[in-house]
Amino acid sequence: MQFTEFGRTGLTVSRMILGTGTFGKQTDEAQAHGLLDRAAQDEATPMATLSVAWILANPAVTSVILGASRIEQLTDTLAAADSKLASAVKTKLDDASIVYRTGDAGK
View (tube, rainbow, N blue to C red):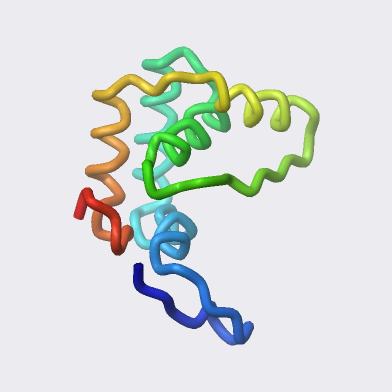
């Protein structure tokens, strides 16, 4: 796994984690939201559930740091632990973010 400095914080983080933080910034924001919105609609699941389920579906991920500003977000996010992501949806999200992920088997 490759590591890099996290901005000017002095922290060293894995590039894979940085990749998840840049998905919406390096991809046109409207496109990123559109892709996630469509996937969430297709799966009939809240975007928070879909997003965390997608992250958990990556075998290189061992845990997820959660955050929520509303109880509904927390409920939706925690539901991802029991959610099974359809293979086609995972592939679509993986393909859209492949350029931002370093060190995983998909690249």
